[in-house]
Structure formats: C-alpha cells, structure tokens
Image (tube, rainbow, N blue to C red; front, side):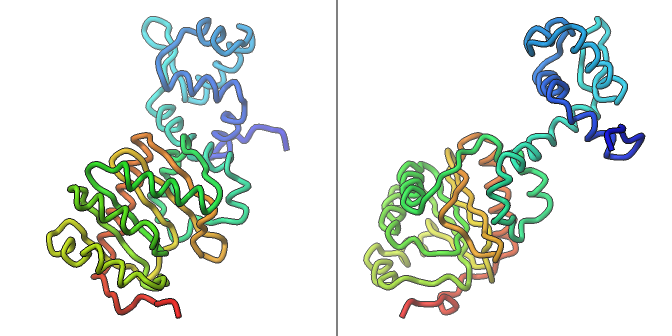
Length: 269
C-alpha cells in the first residue's frame, strides 16, 4: 500500500503527499529559489531538501534554470494553482460533512481555492450583522443571490440605493416573504427605485448557494445536505480572487434567471 504508483494521477498525489515538498512548491509559486535558500527558509537540512527536490524535478514539477535556480515548470505552476482548492476543502472537511455545494457548476467548484483566505462566520445574528455592514459600507454596487428575504435590512439597502449604489438581486421563487414586506417596500419607494434603474431583479426556480457582495467584501453560504440554505454558517472574504468568484457566479446565475415574478413568492400566514 505504501508503494509509489508508477503512473496516473495517483503518482502526482504521491509526490504532493510530503509536507516539505508542498512547502517547496508553494514557495516556488512565489519566486525562484536556490536550494540552499529554500532549505534555510523551510528550516530543512540540505540533505532533506536535496532528496525532496530531486523527486519534484523527476516528477516534472520543478526544473533548474540557466543559473542553477529552481523554477516551477508550466506543469508544476498549473498543479500549484489547484492546490488551494484542496486546501480549502481539507480545512473545512467537518463543515462539508453536513453541507454540500448544492447545484454549483463544476467550473466554480474548480475555483474553490478563492475561498482559502475566507473567514468562517457562525451564528444567525453575527451573519446578519455582517450583511448589514456589507450593505452600509457599499459605495458602488450591491449584488446578491438570496433564498430568504432579509426584511430587517430593506431600509439599509434602500438608503444606500438612494445615495447612488446600484442594487441587483436574484430571488428564489420558493422564498417565503415575511409579514410587512409589501408595506415596507412601499414606504421606501421600492418601485420608484426600480423604475429609475437603480434596482434590478431576476428570479430562479430555486437557490441553494447564496451570495452577497459589493466592491470590497462578500460572503457565500452553502446548503445543508437537504439542499436547504444554511444561515448559521457563512464564508466571508475581501481578497480579489474571492470577490471575482462571487462576481462570476452572480453573472452566471443572472444569465440563466428569468424575470422577477412577485406572484410566485410565498407569503407568511
């Protein structure tokens, strides 16, 4: 069982199984190194560093440059770019024991490395406070994909829209509308904001993965194993890669969403 696979993707995973080799690849993803520098920074002996680097070179992940420096090959750089996705999934393996990725398209699953620097926020109240801060601190736009209606935040959103922030949202057709929403929307002049083009909306038959983001920060919520959105755990991030993931996912959902139909929403009795 401990023998190295001779070929196939198993042989690649075997090479990535060593912590020192992974650290070497991560450092080389940032810049080129000489072996002595790499060993020193990773607190490894030259013998350890040489043995592990020889394996990385033989596997085609690393090569020597003209002046003897160590560089990632094109193949190696591509492999290194995929490691963050596995790192994120591994660190959140307990979360994914009772959550799923819902109907997330494969092309977005393959980019889960963008979540690696995210903070995990727990608790409905803490999550609602983050949402409110996100709305309040937006300066250009707010975009969201929602399965539930945040009634308490409508006035916060409308206040930002009145100051020139564009609001675009996608609702789930099976979302339950809380009591008082209609009256509150009338109070803030929601239809007028829509007619001015400051609010735009579309609808999906079902929303499993929720996302809210502006130009500076964003958050994503994955569903439980039943496919129901979980408002108890949220991934929050501010790094460009994560915000790009949110933006691309929103654009994907916007294109397949249909016109907003108020009549399809369910109202609380």
